[in-house]
Length: 192
Image (cartoon, rainbow, N blue to C red; front, side, top):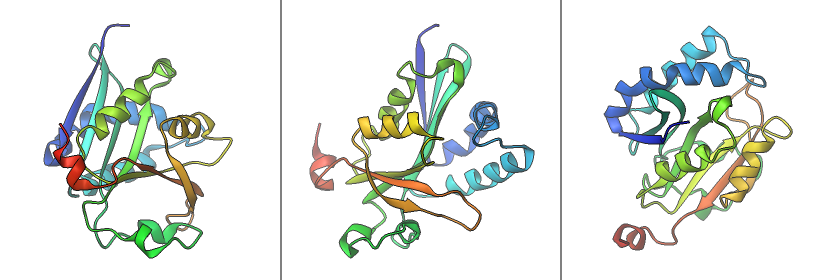
């Protein structure tokens, strides 16, 4: 294994990077429990091209030499988000309040099988969150036992479960998790 490098794409720059990581996406999500086929990949592409229009969009790609071995991306939750309405329990209004800069959502974090359990997911995660200046980060993860390694990693990184999310009809039930990263955005933004 050569040195792993991490490349970040922000905003519209991320739109042009779809072809960079799409083969890795197809490989990872062809595996169980996802078992995605061509129509699922086409749907992902459509969603991704909408996601790159969101405020705060950021993509990080991991490479081992020329090989793309992993990727992660997300964006800021807008003030009018429906993210918290998909959670199965009533959360306090102050918790679900969004202002377009408070919470950053991770939509994908994946590493190709030959490179798993080498710290690459943790490094992708750290590169993705570097300098965001938000109060918290949220994500969803598939339930046990399908995603046990991912859930254990997120818990080790400090994420706390806040409920179960069912984002759309026919979707699996996901564990909604939150990582508190800064008590005050002004302090986070001013930190060196």
